[in-house]
Length: 350
Length: 76
Image (cartoon, rainbow over all chains, first blue to last red; front, side, top):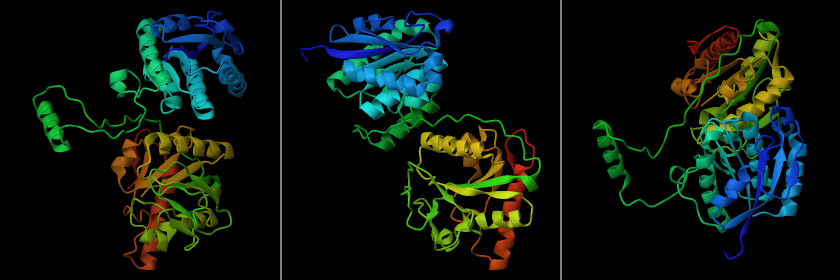
């Protein structure tokens, strides 16, 4: 590439040298120059690319006016037509991280642009965009700037030139939750045994399949009066209406469905069946209530044990479904339940 | 999903057969169920017996929602 590639940079009010918390409400503005970390970043590109401009936006403004902010950013990006968008690094700053994450997600999804940002692993912004953009792992404070910028720049150069990135730990970005097929010289059994031997000897070894880390949520307070409560039914058992109108996948679900069951006494068969690809569905297809017991909830409502069954039944397929998708489904369904004032939920899994 | 729904402060009970998974995904109220392909049912029983079993299980799940807990609890 003889011509330099173009980078558009995003920073918050602080790194944009506008001000501190008092300026966090500033709407986004564009400056056709390098501001703050954009200067060091361009240096780290070693002449291969240039930063054509910097968008500066207050952290509060972005998070409170996300749509307006993203509209401005998208418009600016379209005008500047960069090859790569770079944001942050946000270290462990939550609002800044969320802004970088949402921006990265929007650029990648809507404009199909490569985005590079940097964050501390636990920044909530990581989960927003790690599978859409490249998030370089940084320290939790701006003291890590000098280390973060060269790593972000090296990845930016590769993305701009269309060079495939190596493994996350090698390149210094946060794992994107994707698996890649690759050739190994030694077969799996040999690798497993040498890993085991290393472990027995107390030597270092590196797993090829890290287990996901789970966090814990405090138990929600109990329902005080069941007889007045609205209870919702939810399943990961893949029970869907005949014809599977929303096309919920039989494995590795990408979506969930909600179906109005207010007029039903239970889930009839046929009428409902299981699209789940991870268990023998014969018993579920014979009687879908064996997986999602709507019939009994309706009966308990009739008897006055509970106040009401929520009108909508929620369903997806829980086999091979990624933790991040399951989290997303839970967040989306939970928001609906919360909004509707549902008092409690039964979720069944196969 | 259980955990994310509970994060909204709504009590949720997980009815599942592999309760170790329930625990590892962060369910707090757990009702162990019959079998993977028919958690809330048992086709080997007579229709009457299966109905009684199913009603007992769902009743237990509702009681779980009405029970104050401070840690992961199996309602057996």
